[in-house]
Length: 212
Image (cartoon, rainbow, N blue to C red; front, top):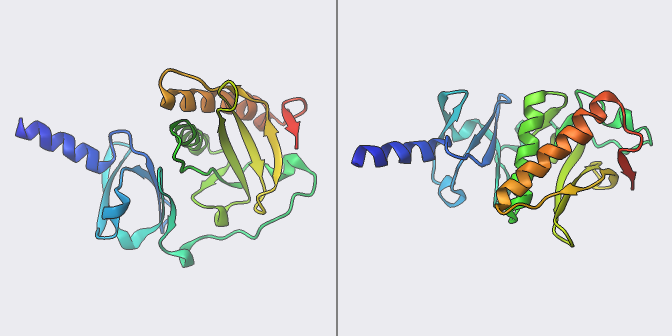
């Protein structure tokens, strides 16, 4: 029984089980882990898992962490690869072109919101259409997953510039489920497939996005 407990504890500490917090290192690597913000101040390193390998990352190698509940903490601002803000000129396809640097805000106190945002960021990191960065200062633009519980629960995506001005937003999709986490994840994946993979990635934006 003791061995089983230690094994489960090790998995939880390593971030293998439902890792939620986002870590970006000095060399640009990105990881998911579960870290207690109150304990982090006293840590010298953290242990994470990626692609079935375990990594011990010294705290000095971490540029930023976005805690799923507590928000973004930048540890080494001088190590950020900052991008100068650019105002939207009216050319939407160019503004959101492939290979641009994009920040997807993650943290929230709402389960549906944070699970949807995390799912969206994971999908974008995997498809590599854009470069997904860990904070606004490194981004060309922001892409938000928005969960809205006014009326029937629904969700949509919103593109904003670095001045926090809304450029475009998608039509909404249903975002309700008996399990709140699933509501966020499922609606985020639906939005991703419908409005990104089948629309923006193919330069077919007419009729898919609502004007601001």
